[in-house]
Length: 241
Image 1 (cartoon, helix red, strand yellow):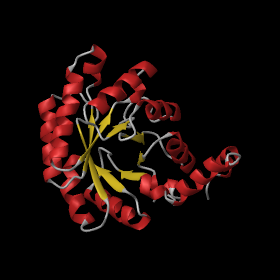
Image 2: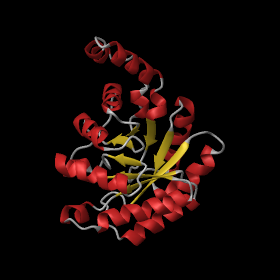
Image 3: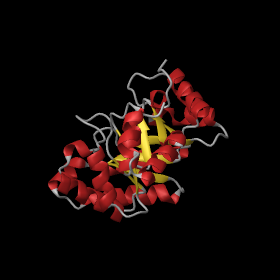
């Protein structure tokens, strides 16, 4: 059931209450059902696809190696296929990321979640923006979308604002909070700040540590357009097998 405590807190505001009800009814269409485990098997990919079909998830996010398999299993279903590049640390050479993106798209990916170069950003190198622009240009050449993972756990508020502006200026379609491999993941306060800074045409993907329905709803209310999670079944009220 929808979290009563969350509704009780927000229900005093009629507009907010209606938003929460609408979001709950359409929650599956915010979720990118994810499995990026280093020990997953081909069976896990097939299960991920089947669960996406069953629960109506917006998409699935899989490792690059399994994109071809996932595409075959998705078939003609309206399920977005997302994969990652430069994952999970982001300090690969730009050419390596571009090659990963090209291969992922060739194998059937609709969207790419690329980890940006935190070390270049922290150093103040202009290459940070150039790299995002190169990744964006390549992705858009194939009518695919680019999400840039900025790893909010490593950023101050001022750095987060600057990171969002760089990504937006460089052509990113979404800015994503986390890989799920850092010390912390998505936080509502980070989402709210990103919402304030980013232009309306750039979306926000909250990811990392989102394990409950209440967390997912709170992220969406704060401004997230997408939820990346490996706990999609639990969020939808199903026990994890």
